[in-house]
Length: 121
Picture 1 (cartoon, rainbow, N blue to C red):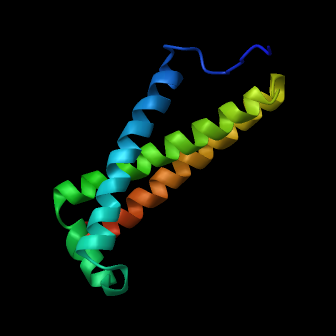
Picture 2: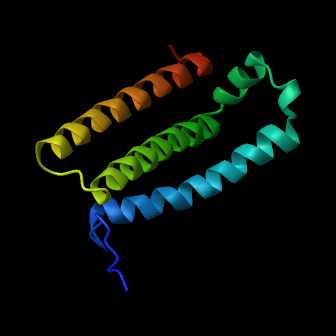
């Protein structure tokens, strides 16, 4: 039988964060679907409604948490999938920093949009 290999060190920070963000995403995705597909039907959602929801600090923080958890979980998953496929050496460092910069840019842009939607900038 083939030996199982994972780039995640069990119990390491990245390993724990990958699992924590997965759990956070399951809960927040359920919240998102419930609120925006059952309470408010997708056809009825407007920019004004979104702006009104974003003015609520709790909702705003929930959406920013959703953004950060999703960005980390996705980009960390892509990075580790590439490492599991054999990425190593300088290419591994380049990919790590490209994904890190992309993640920071994604979170910065998403937070900026959230702040604008909330009317705070």
